[in-house]
Image 1 (cartoon, helix red, strand yellow):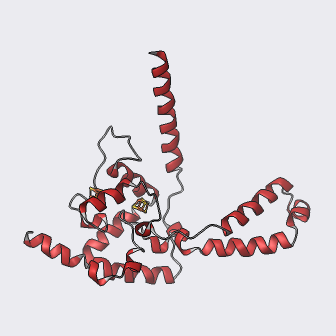
Image 2 (tube, rainbow, N blue to C red):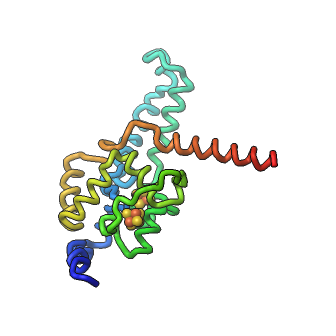
Image 3 (cartoon, helix red, strand yellow):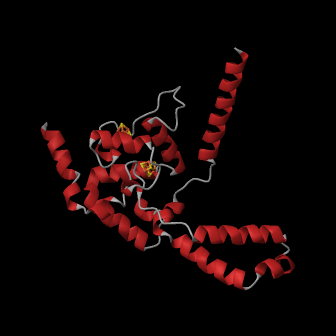
Length: 211
Ligand code: SF4
Ligand code: SF4
């Protein structure tokens, strides 16, 4: 191990963070501790809204109050009920998130906690690489688009101040009300990629049948 690497290992101070705290960070730089899927704030709100609106029999009176179709009110109440029953996510490094995530796999193989410890960060997708869901660099690009670069800034911050200080800073922000919903892009990033993959699959199938 060279001097620089030794220095870096000290900086990544994994021994200064508990297992529980490790579950607040994700390999790609997302801070799971600020994600509502883990925090469950919206689930509590959905539960209370469902209790009040359903108890008010809003499906009966809503169409007259608000001019909304009965079916749409019923769908809305159904969404609230389903949402309030969802389990909280444990966090990416506690078995939550995408179990087949190629970033998580890459980081695991290299013995890192996050990509911040990798010399290649952020690794880049090749020009013709459309293998979004299997390739770590392509998936990191997708995540970075969805989070408008916030995850990469987090990785840079970890490189600068280490895990201990990063977690402490993030927890302060979460206490002040910050959630990942404040940084996620409006663009339909995953929908576009799924549609592209679907079209490519149909094209491949047609070509196979025509052979
Ligand atoms: S599953 Fe992958 S993309 Fe999702 S938070 Fe974990 S490392 Fe990031
Ligand atoms: S190669 Fe890419 S995905 Fe893998 S650890 Fe490095 S930056 Fe992360």
